[in-house]
Length: 389
Ligand code: NI
Image 1 (cartoon, rainbow, N blue to C red):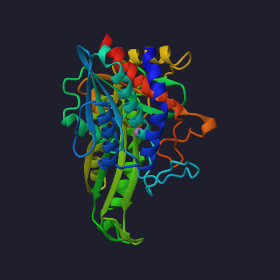
Image 2: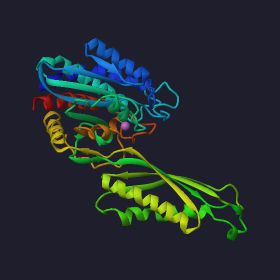
Image 3: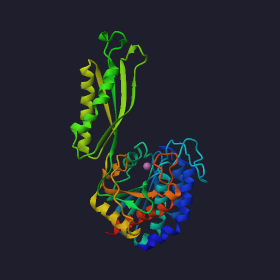
Image 4: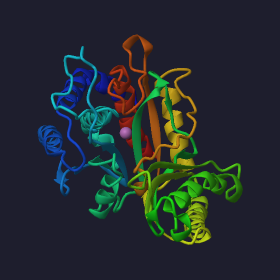
């Protein structure tokens, strides 16, 4: 479909303008009202029907000229509470303390551009393309909300993209199997008996319980899970005690768990509960362990991932197709693939000449806008070719 390549090129300047406008007006989780409205305005011009979702986001649908399956394309739209440090940019964020520091502005612009291109080949489309403009990815609530509002009902396959600064611009990856880890949150509240710091025998010290837990919990990774199946357990926050000579009655810690399989995730959850409760019991106290599910692992199905790989190598030249290592980052795209087949691709946007190799979520993060052409074409071609099969 060289026609799609030409169409994406035709709309490239508009795509960049659209992305820069979103970049100047970043909106946080479930506050993407302006962004949703901007997308809706373009869809109105294109005469592509859509419905808005609650509280933000929208789902559009383009019915092809011939009957067939339904494929969904997803872009996320939210920004982060990060202060932008790209002082030289003409389109720097106008919102203090808010920034598109993960490239979701680019995703939105890419998907809208794919919609424009697909609209022009509507008569040749064999089936339906659904466009999911999703809010609130950064706190893993958006995809869940979209699924609850029917985003994947009647969908045969779903495809998503994340622009990726750790891959060179001009390359893309869509591996078969694990791509992103599950990302869960846990907390442990230890309860002891406070008292005078000079009289430990009359107390139960919560500081000792929480310290012991932190030092021992890595044994969950090293002794309880398959060494060939990666797991991360991180304690990121700890609060204990009030004063140098008071034995702490309470202690609380919070952490995150990352896994690539649901069996391992269950095992870690059970082990954390046991470690928390038994550690407290060892010192004469009690513990309450809470484990909250965040995102599921993103596991790309084989046939869709191979289709994306074929498109990448055919459309973007030799060397464009790379195999990115799975990341222990989380991505709520997993809520769609829980319900239907699909895959998630990474499109490289790192370019040392344009200073776009900064880590995602950093105040200097930026996107090589040439990479957006790759992303938009990949979206459009994936939908077109999936439906042709
Ligand atoms: Ni992101």
